[in-house]
Image (cartoon, rainbow, N blue to C red):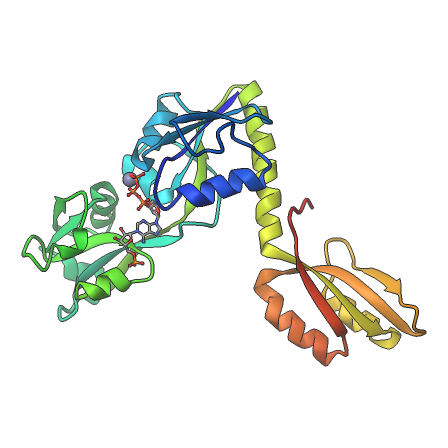
Length: 283
Ligand code: PRT
Ligand code: ZN
């Protein structure tokens, strides 16, 4: 049995449960109640915890793996392995100051006081930059610290930046970026085999999210050029249409190049382009 620790409530919770569902792992209670749930179709037990407790829980062996933000792993300073980046809960951890204060480079932080809920990450950063600054650790509402005279600057999570803006602050230095990751420790063979199966499923889900299935029609003379733009996994399927000289091309394209590809395909003479989401993708 593989024990997975996930966040009970908060920004990681919904995406984590969706990921498990997309991986075909069904929790006995739907993940809705209680602090422990067993999967009824995969040898997995899920523990619901505060995200801050997940690194310790893996380190102490109560859980084998966990899903948590990279920032939390770094802050807790546990020697854990990042197994797979998961692409959600993306954010950055940045230093911000009142909008009329001038900070252009890390050295300008010398002698300032900085409020944060992430003192370890900040301490490591300041040490690396050779900066002496005092750190005030507070557990929440970090953004109000400069306004109430608690600190000159803050070090906190930024996503859209609107919280900084509404507190009269501006982001001046990005210290790290973060996203949700699957994290773990060394495991005995039996558990490692289950983990490999779980990771295989996550990769198939993530690959599918990043790609789309594309179908289009094209005349024979355009096939060569078009198949070069959408080479697919091995090569595209080319199927003759009932209409003489015309073919249907089926392939896979990356979400990142999507619009550029579509424009090129239209210029090349493709018609009737259909783009369909992929549910799972195994290369
Ligand atoms: O209860 P528990 O301890 O489990 O949860 P938590 O309250 O500690 O964490 P939670 O659920 O708020 O966030 C979990 C993880 O999501 C964090 O550790 C980050 O890795 C990630 N994440 C992504 C964020 C944000 N985006 C985010 N915007 N975590 C927090 N915020 C907060 C930030 O603290 C600030 O107050 O949102 C505000 C800024 O947002 P913007 O959009 O205004 O810039
Ligand atoms: Zn937390």
